[in-house]
Amino acid sequence: MKKCMIVSTAALALLAGTSLASANEDHKGITGPFATPMDVTRKCLECHEDASKEVMATSHWTWELEQEIDGKKVKRGKKNAINNFCVSINSNWPRCTSCHVGYGWQDASFDFSDESRVDCLVCHDTSGDYKKAKGAPAGAGMPPGYTGKASFDKNPVDLVKVAQNVGIPQRDDCLACHANGGGGNNVKHGDIDMSLLNPDKGIDIHMAAEGNNFTCQECHQTSEHKISGNSLIVSPMGTTPVSCENCHDGEHKSGIINKHTATVACQTCHIPTFAKKDATKMSWDWSKAEKGKPTEEEHGHKVYIAKKGRFTYEQNVTPEYRWYNGVAGSYQLGDKIDPTQVTKLNYPLGDINDKNAKIMPFKVHTGKQIYDVKNNYFITPKVFGFKGDPEAFWVNFDWDKAAEAGMKASGLAYSGEYGFAATETYWPINHMVAEKGDALKCNDCHGDNGRLDWQGLGYKGDPRKVKGAARN
Image (cartoon, rainbow, N blue to C red; front, side):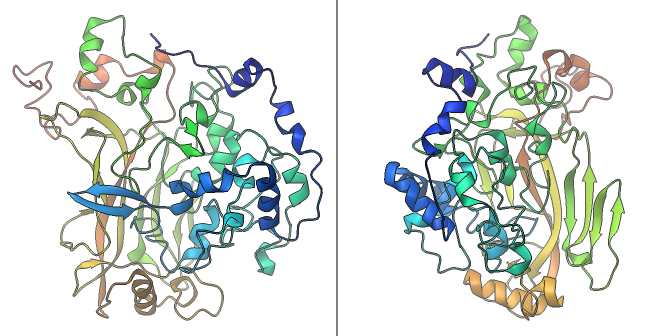
């Protein structure tokens, strides 16, 4: 049963006496020309005077949140977290900040107080013509035509046309960045890819046109530009969670199933697999990067790129399952590691004895990445650079120079000796919800070949078969 009425954005507009078509009618009178994207923002602020200030108070702008991790208050986010994809934004700003909700974050001197630098168009474009992440993949958040790099400015964005067609954010506005993080479609999350733009019921019942036809903000509710939801790698404390229980009370017709809801997350049964249509990257080995080696492809995916190393991709993936109480632990920049062990750069907290924890599905992405052999901590290498940059690994394939430059940007010492160590990151699976009839059945977990590692989860064995195995 549902605790709330779920309606689409279109229905909400109609209830308010408007329509999606009329949502941007007030903007048709906007005229240009606009010399820069920042001029568009200044125009927006003439009517929406608080908009930039609201955006600037969010982690979409700051790329960090104040959080308490391991008893310490820290500021953590994309700005300073380490992952096992492209590792860190430090020294790689123009590439990584292509998806920033701002303009021109070229280096550490970016002015976060400049209201004109807020990119209104990236979230509010309804024309489909605004490009940023794809059109200028190293443009520091600028759209094509305004990056100052000829290779990215071949097809300039018509800023006047886009400004005249702003309105309620649509799926493609969100997916342009969130589905393409890490360098391509479905690289990172596993359950967020471009197939969600127009999915059928087999991919996601919530977002399918013949299902609920949700926009992203149906679940990621928004107030004053603050959007609920967290990425576990950058916001491990889960400060603004999105929960199935916001709309579903968890009641089932079966009493046996109802007993499971105390220990099993909704997603565990209702998202049997992820990467249903578009394969997702499951591993990245930076140690294999080698100048001059040819690119390799398998099943339409590049599994070896000289400047990046070797990858694996998987489609229709069965998740791994862990206890999760809504909070995660994480590796902090400068933390010591044991290079002989796998370092968890983030990890869900909770166990069988934690009353607040439930069994939750995850994508586990494994990596092998550069670390400082003497200081025993991970390096934030400078991988990106334009032609002629002597420090960028993607230009000169010199790990030593890339490590020195990257660690200088991060404010940490580099000993001059590097190696490669194994890592893993955890990505909660929340999207790609199956139809009711395709949810997991009893034997999917409790059968002879069930998908759960009962002992790994802290049970003596399958609690349906082993007396006293269940959580107290």
